[in-house]
Image 1 (tube, one colour):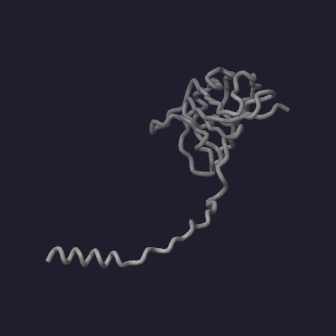
Image 2 (cartoon, helix red, strand yellow):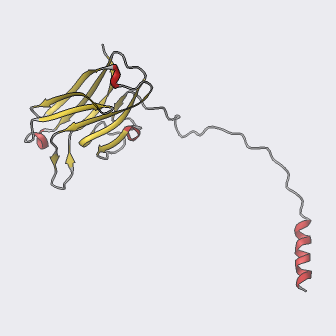
Image 3 (cartoon, one colour):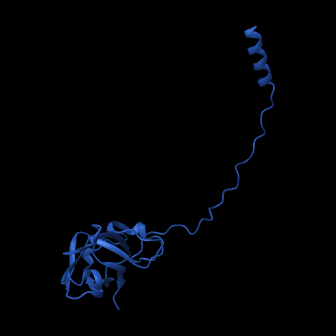
Amino acid sequence: MKFAVVAIALMITGCTPLPDSYPVPEQRPTSHGPDPEGLQAFLVFDNPRTPAYLISDFLDAPPGQSWRWTNSKPTLRLNTAATDNIRFRARGAFPHQSHQSLMPVTLSVLLNGKLLGRTTYKAAGDFVFQKDVAPELLQTNGENEVRLELDKVFVATDGVKLGMILAELGFEKRK
């Protein structure tokens, strides 16, 4: 009896027609925005791709925010197509409310592990750090690691270390 049931089941399934063959559907690109581009030489922090540039020591920020808090050694990566006639520029702030009691604060900028420059800020407020870059400090058409090091940071009541606020930084052609 068991054999008869199995035989009937096999005959029923064996009698079904094969499905028609269908061509592969047309392939279309997704419409979820532009294709991602590579890293650029200059970063403005309201860029939606900001997280792709950051390596370490940056505090989280809402998307589209035009500035970002750092810890003591914020590190990021930038790309540059040229090495000649390049200047590094960073714009940010040491807020008066938190940092006035810390001043002076020394900022060191390292490119690919080598010191680009160091400066000491004696008063809280906005700052612009800029310095010409020697060609041997940069990798052409490749990622360049940029690390900013602060000798002092403000420690908030919740224990969060606040280094500085950055709005933009990167490589630009000297004028």
